[in-house]
Length: 119
Image (cartoon, one colour):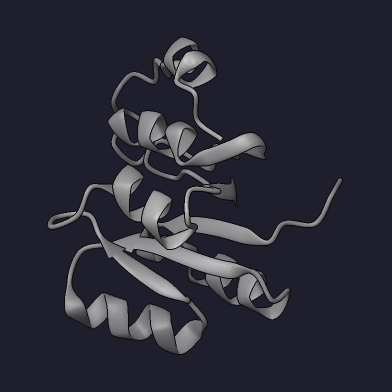
């Protein structure tokens, strides 16, 4: 498995993932809501925190990575979050599914991701 250089880490539940990715010198983009959580994530090593209530995750990841997208996007939420995770991942990137906190049916739109022209 190749090392990763940019990870989008959603959900406050993945604090250890933020620390581990930062320790590997990855650029860590964390998706959260709220200034208090953002401050904690930055203290743990997040390079940037995307506020899911005020920003579009896909646009934020595209901008923060200069269009390269993330190489690893762990998804503990599932549901609609899974589509955003897939689209935020670069070609040949990885989207480990860590759970389904949303409890919504997971029907990822891999067809769209495959032909969307994403890098």
